[in-house]
Image 1 (cartoon, rainbow, N blue to C red):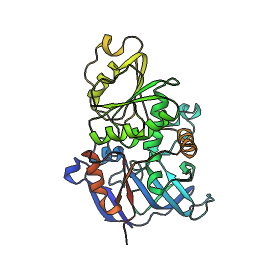
Image 2 (cartoon, rainbow, N blue to C red):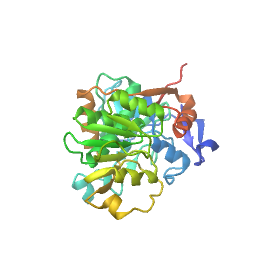
Image 3 (cartoon, one colour):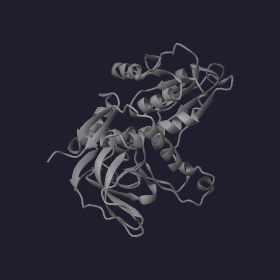
Image 4 (cartoon, helix red, strand yellow):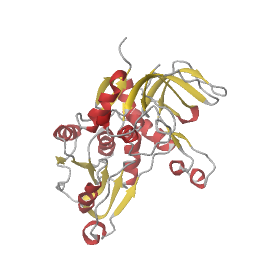
Length: 334
C-alpha cells in the first residue's frame, strides 16, 4: 500500500514525511483492518512530523482522523465487511489504573495514540482496536466525517472544560478545523461566540457560521467573556485571552502543544477567580457524546480535500495557514 512515514522529524520545510510502499497491516486479536476512505490532517500530525512531540514510534504513519471501511477483523471481533467506522486519537487505555476507574481514561499513564504510538491513516489501510473504533453518524460524506474524529471531539471536550454557562459569551482564539466545529456546538446551545484569529478568511468563516464578532488574534472582544478556548498553539495568546475574561471566567487550552506562556500579571490575568484549564486527549465517552450531537445537529464541516499523494503538501499548507477549516486526505484517483 501507499503510506507516508515521519522518518526525519523536523521543520515542515525540510520534508519530514516520506511517501513509501508498505505492507498492508494484518489485524491482530481484537483489531479491525479498514480501507481508509478519508483522513483528516490535524495540527497534532504537524507536531509529530516536526518533532514538537517526542518520537514514540520511529517512522510512524501519522493520521488519527480516519474514516474507514471494514475489510477484515482479527480474532475475537465481529464486524460486518463494508461497515463505516471512525478511528480517532485515543486507541488504548489500561482500564485498571485509578484514572480509568474513575472515568478519566484520557489521563491513563499507559494510554496510546493513533498516528503517534501506532501507525495511522496517512495510508491506504489502517488497523485499530475494535473497542476504540467509533460508529459514525449518517448524513455526512467521508471527507466531512474525518475532522469530527479529532478536531470535533477535542473541541467538544475543550468546550466542556471551559464550563461555559447557558447562554454565555464564549471567546475562541484561533479558528481552524477544531474551532469551527466547537463554535457550532456552542452556537447550537445558545452561546454568543466571539472569534479572535489572524486569518481574514477564518474571520469571514466565523461570521458566516454565526459568530457575533471576529477580530485579530490578540484584539480584545467587544464584550467580557464568560469562557474562552485557545486553539492556536501560541502561548503569547494566553495573556489577552485571560484579560478578556469576566470575573469567574475559564480559559480552556485545547492543544497538545503550546509555545511558552509569558509572565502573567496576577491582578490583570488571574484575580477575580479566573482559571486556566488544560485539555488532555479525550475519553471514548466524549467521542460518543460528540458524534451523537453531530448526528442530531447537522454541522457545517468546511473541508479542503487533498489526494493521499499530496499529504506532505496538505501538512505544509496547514502549517502556513493556507486554508480555513480542515484539510482531508482522500484516496488517490486511479
